[in-house]
Length: 101
Image (cartoon, rainbow, N blue to C red):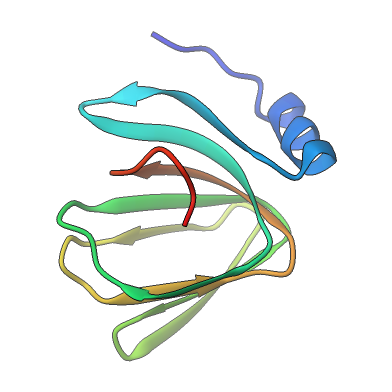
């Protein structure tokens, strides 16, 4: 079980400009991350889930583009080619890898 105060975690990762792995969830990683770079096209063998907690993040999934703002959620289905970019946002995610790309 995990209990997290998101406002405090957002402040922490923004100040440190870092990722914070919170816990393992069914073999995937629940993490909060300061996202300030581009991730090139790729796909995963499992679904990914992102919640924008602060800032703006841009996602492209196959031929569709999405702009996430605070409070927005995106789920990327396994096998879908996608990429992402941000100049500085905080994302809560469930992903198949512990470290950011």
